[in-house]
Amino acid sequence: MIKIMENKIELYNYYKSQFDKIEINNENSIRKYSSVENEYNIINNGVGIRDLSRYSKIFIHGKDSESLLRRLTTNRIIDLKVLQWVKTLFVNFEGNIIDRTLLIKFEDYFVLIGSNTEEQKLFRWIKRFIIKDDITISNACDEYSVFEVIGSQATSYITTILGDKFDKLKDNNVLRVQVENFFIHGIKIDDCGVINKYIIVVDSKNAIRTLEIMNENKSVFDFGMVGEDAYNIFRIEHGIPIVPNELNDSVNPSEVYLDSEISNLKKDYMGHENITFSNDSFTRLVKIKFKSEIKFPNLPITIIDCNNKDIGIITSYANADVIKSPIGLGFVDAQFKLNGDNYYATNKNEEIEINICEIK
Image (cartoon, rainbow, N blue to C red):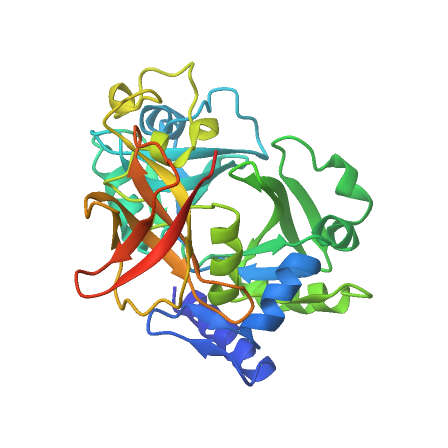
């Protein structure tokens, strides 16, 4: 474990040695490597690499592992074969989101890659349902490094990393490729049905060498690392929800359009009776466009109509020079109809006029 922690420290030291303008916040999240403008251009027009290693990762082993996962996950895993993956949610008794995950089946174990940087949350939830089962569960956050390859040139670029095996990267299979003296695992995935991207999973001890290889193969591509500030703009533009802003234990999957990660053939998982896509009491995710600069310090921000009535909340926003005006994501009542009236973001002391746009 000490060596694994050393690998993580070495990775961050590597970043600091390569990027003199890097900014890391108090939660060890890399806000930017170079500049928001440069990274935003890369993710839109080139090949961006995001380090997802801070997200929760859980190792599950034992003959009862699949049975447990079937009881706790929203998607169908009974047909999952070795070196295949599925996107699935974990929900609580109320049907609200604990985490959004990528479940990978290896030869004799499963690995869960979550969307939450609070690494113990999903781990504690799963562990509470293990009583006398033949299951070993461990927190693998520091054992694996995960990189996301995203951008308009990502598909062309990834062929240089995966080689002639790229054509086998289809549907829900995991492509295992030997690079030098170690293996990487590649996955092709979409995010909310709008963005195609690739996931690279590697042992943490090989993370730096993997990054070096990816950089050595950048060729003519507009290639670079992308931090959270630039990605935040990008994902808000495309209506992609994240933990904890839009994905948390007060949000039902129906409110954030994650129906593709829920199997309608499963009726036996925890919380299934409270997941529905026609409940009038739910809210729905929407896009927000602010008409002036945002000065509110905290989230969420209340949305009101022209009659000063609360109609929703804003849960994310981005305010940067690379976009014409600030943008955000939020929730309004599922039955609320946008009718062209004026809407405002407010913290009771200040109001900013906004436009609200549907995501679906």
